[in-house]
Length: 182
Image (tube, rainbow, N blue to C red; front, side):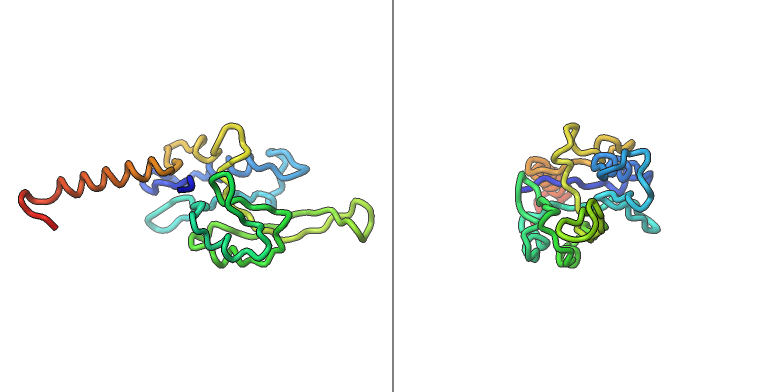
């Protein structure tokens, strides 16, 4: 089972600290965290607010990921216990965005240097996919989890899932009337 980050909507207060931490953990080339133009504020998780719920949504690192299955260029691959995104392979087709059942992938504009044509050092933009990478290359770990003031975000792994299932089973068994089975 791949690890992933999930939020407890009962604890989330919608402060967006997780989004800020995500952006700072994944710097945009040419900008520090403090001089980042608003158009480059692109967290890899999105806070969703409804009338009754506030919670961040991000990639669930699916075992049989629909995004990996539809990617024609292998820009999305299984690796390092996550679904990895290889930007240099992305052609911007948006198949992954459509395939993701969680809405956790989005297209972002990225500046690239033109190589074989145009003025030297000229830059253009291309659309590429973007998704949570569990801060796999960030030494301090998952930035969103580390900064959440209410501890609403947590890392789910196989052990955590099994523990949760056992607790639910125990609760379910304890709530049945004596002598009855289901």
